[in-house]
Image (tube, rainbow, N blue to C red; front, top):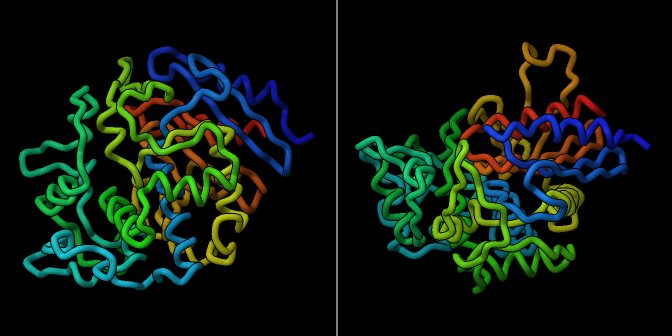
Length: 345
């Protein structure tokens, strides 16, 4: 027995302050021993938005299609997208780089494409700033791409040492998946991931009347944005639980969804935002020496989301952690809980 359940539960209970964190749900698997806990206003098995952790689902589908020979890492995305999408998709310093964009560029955030969600326009406005003050709106794919084209692109695709986190990359990957398979993203997730793994509480959010997921928080207020959540799809629209995200995470890194030997090839790291690095379809959380001089927190690979959700794996420690703090305003809170959970192992 490796896990002290009381110590782990105390981390979740102590995290609740009803100012920033109103509920937590986490699952830990360490050397084969598993613990699933919750606190505050999130009940056991309550579903929540995993936000950009959804990108792991999209990555899994892409890697599966690659394993079937239906596309390749270095394929030009223009092979799979219509001309109206590709037209001036990436113009940087007057040069059109659209035709040079590859599948790897999108997966690794090395495309240099603008981020339709977080990036500010010339007036200083952004989609995220509108949504977090409660202005709910539906964003069709075509509108997302049009808006992305209107923003400043960041660098030429594949510029050495450059990465820029862009939700636009995964919107495009989702459209590529749909064009190759002839099925929507919900069907692709269901057929490759959800049904084979027997996930009963996990799905792509597509119905604005669906009230099963926990309402998100922005600071102390509840954030009702169902129209927006149905828009994010392949870059952030999955609903799950901490336990079922754990099942998915293990499958992702064990070869159940695509060949396990792909994993090492994904570990090509670029700085993206402190202390995160982007690989190809995955992220690495690595605390710098100054914050962890005795290396008590191992490198973790996986993904996280703006909703306060995360899913990470440490091969070094045989450790998996998934969960959420269900808070969109403070990006570090879920990682603070993650670190404290690891310290209690």
